[in-house]
Each structure stands twice: as structure tokens, then as C-alpha cells.
Image (tube, rainbow over all chains, first blue to last red; front, top):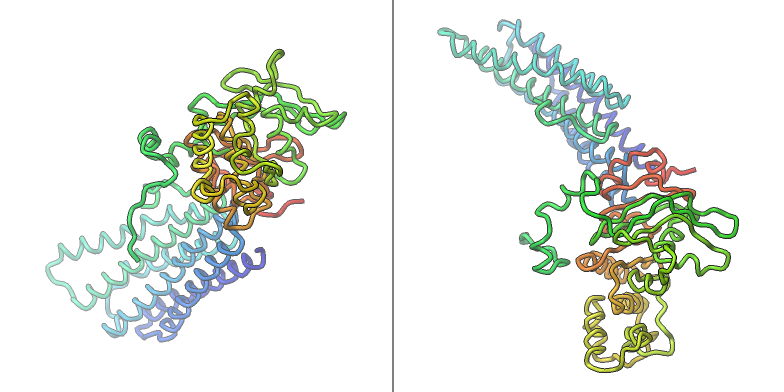
Length: 209
Length: 285
């Protein structure tokens, strides 16, 4: 059982690192006005790892019928693995935006870049909170979520009031901000899963949003 | 595959009507919202000078399955045997403190332990049908000892007990075969029928499936869940998954002490005590 749990942890740590790398690479490509094909490869790899986590979790449940903290860890590992996979998938979506719209360096980056920085910080915290099983780090993620939510919402409101917009910039930034907002939500879910592992209960649903 | 909403087969229509709409939700707090059926207060048990139970305070809810778990030698079987005064049958064994059945102390002076054992029946680890008796007489034996004569009344009780033990359909055409001629799993259900025939209020089960194969185990587990509609069931088990499957409440014993008890789901998912956590996850010692 312990060997299986160690394997589960190692898979999740690998996913955490790869997903962090994927989002960072996608946003670097956005800033530099180029594509990042490697992100698509990493996203596929994350999907495979997520499948491996699911299979291993089911196997551990079937073979060892875990209870107490082991059961909580396995349940949470499914959510955490899915979260890491989604980080990678949204990084892939951002790269697709870059491929569709081309070089976006001429667009105003004043909102996307700080939002991306905040989101990357949330991702880093989620990986760290999981690795250290640290409830305090996990709680910090939730506190940062409003920033990313508001950035997306405010940008939409600003666009709706604008008379003249550069459609290419407006569409690409809306999509990227939306993906960042979704990544941030998954960071919150991962943080909540860490809290569940350690304390046995997740924060109330209202606190997530 | 078609998936349809299925009713709980373990409950009769009458039981379904009186059951709470969300039994699991009701159980999550673990607080005693009904009068306990059985309650131990400061229960201590001894084998000679050796103290096996160190003052157990524990309440058992009516019409629920309560599981007692813990490592070998933790006192769980001793506790069970104190609940119907069987402990004192062991030479040199004695108990002190109180065990209340519906509020009345079964250890009070003038209480006849034989009558206590009629109200609180017991099923043992190894199926133990009376070897010289047929299936019918195994079920009827206790009643015959109380003076009940052969006749339709007795036939009805035997049939009803075998039905409640989910054995009737398998043995109805061979009631006069020896009780030991049927399979181990059937023999254990026969012993449960024998206990039921005495119309107890509580059924104690001491590792009732440890000598059975998985299929027979599954039948006895289903039976436990069905029986709680009529009786209060207390089961001692080494098999934690069995406790997780059948029990509404679970208590964890260690070194003669009750470490923790509560609704089974919360005890197995989020034990309060470190000792329970270590036992459940197999990281003990």
C-alpha cells in the first residue's frame, strides 16, 4: 500500500512540475510573440499522467480498501491530478490562441501580464501546498482568486463599453484571460483538496468562489 | 446497462415508512438522539487479577448495527460477552460497573442472567449447531427448553426464524436433516435462526464470518443489515472492511479501552484519534 501511495505522490509531483512549466511556457510565448509547440506535447503527457493517477487510485482502492487519511489522500489525488491536467490543457489552449491570432505583441498587455503572473503564483502555491501538505499555503490560493476573476470580468466590461476595439487583440485577450481565470479556479480546487487531505474537510463551497 | 433507482431490499414497507429520509445525514454527527438500547457505564472486566476492560462507557443505538473493532487482545470480545453476562461463565472471570438494557442494569442483584441472555442473544465465531439435532430441532431447541411443546406455534416460530435468517428457502424441504449436514455458511445462518427463535431484542455476533468463505460472508453481512430492522445488532469483527460495509456505528478498542466511536463513515474517513488512524491505515506499532 505504501509503495502505491508513494507512486501516486511521485506521479502528482511530476504533473505539478510539468503543468507549471506548461503555463509558464505558454505565457512566455505570448509575451515574445511566438508559438510554443512543446506545450501541446506536455499537455498530452499530462493527460496520460492523469489517466495513470486514476488507474492507480482505483487499483489502490480495489486492492487495499484504504480508509482514513489514505482514503482521503486517494480521493484528493483524483481532484489534484485533474487540476494539474487542466493547467496543461489551458496552457495548450493559450498556445492555440497564439497560433490562431499570430503575433500579439502589439496588443496592450497591461492586464494579461499581471494576471498571468498572479495565476502562475497560484499554480506555484498549489504545487507547493500539495508537496508540503501545507494548509496555510493552500488558503493563500483562495485569497488570490478574486484578483484573477476580477481581471477577466473587468476586461469584458471594458470591452462592452468600448466603441472602437482591435478585434484581434480583444478576442485573444478575452480568451487568454478566460483560460487564466479557469486555471486559477483549478488552483483553488487543488488547494481545497490539500486542506481536505490534512483536515478531513474542505472549506465551505461559498469560500471557493 | 440500465441503471434504475432501487429500493433498499433490507427494509420492509413498514420499516421504510418509519425510516428517516436521509439516514446517512442523520448519522453524521454521532450524537445520541435516541435512548440507547444498551449502555455500559464504567464497565470493567477481569480474568483473575488481570483487568481486560478498563471502565468502558459506551452507548449502543436501537435498531442499528454497531461494530466493535480493534487488534487481538484489545478486549472487544470480552466487552461483547459482558453485554449479556456470558463473561462471568469463564472460570475466574468477573465484571464490575453497569450494563443497562433499556435503562435497567443487567448486573443488578436478583437479575437472572439466563433471562438476560434470552433478551440478548449471541452468535459465535464458529458455527455451532447442536450436532445430534436436525435443522428443525436446532432452531426449536431453546424454546423447547422453556417448555414449549411441538405444534403449530413452534412450527411457525421455526419457519419464521429460518425466514428471518434467510435460510428457509434453502432448507424448507430438508428440515429433518442433521444441522451439521449443511454448508458452513448455512450452519452460521442456522445459528442466527436459533438465536432469533428466542425472540431476543439484541443480537451479539462475535466474528460471525471469520470461518466463512466470501459468498457465505456476504450472505451473513446482508442478513445483519436486514436484522437491524427488528433487532439491535452488535458485531465484533477483525475485518475492518466488514465493519465499514455493515455497521452504522463503529467503536475502536485498544488495550481494554474504548479509544473512539462514531458513525462508521466518519470514523473510517476522518478518525479523531491518532491511534485509530494508525490502526485503520495499518501503521500500527
